Amino acid sequence: MGNQYPHKFTVILEPEEDGGYSVHCPALPGCSSQGDSLEEALDNIKEAILGVLKVRREESLPIRRETPKMVTEEIRQILADRAEDGLPLTIETREVELPAEVAV
Image (cartoon, rainbow, N blue to C red):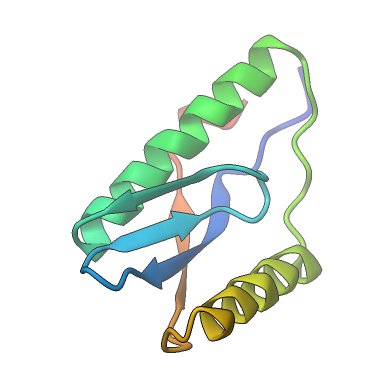
C-alpha cells in the first residue's frame, strides 16, 4: 500500500472549566479526548488518533490530508462555542507525532 498515512497531526487543546483539557483532532472528525494535564491530554489524543487510523486502515478508508483550512475551521467553531458559553477564549494548538511504524 503506497498511500502513507500522515504521522503528524495538529490538535487543539481546550482548557476545561473544572481543570484539565479536552483535545480535538481536526483532520479526523469526531476524534477527541481529554486529560487532567496537558501531557495526559496529548497522550490520550495520540491513542485516539491511533485507534481511528487502525479502524480506517482495516476498512480501507482514506484519511483526509490535514489542511490549514480544516484546522482554522475547527478553531473557529471551538472559539464560537466557548464565547457562547462565556468561557475564556484560551485554546492551544500542538502537533502530535505518531511513531513512524504506524504511518503505513
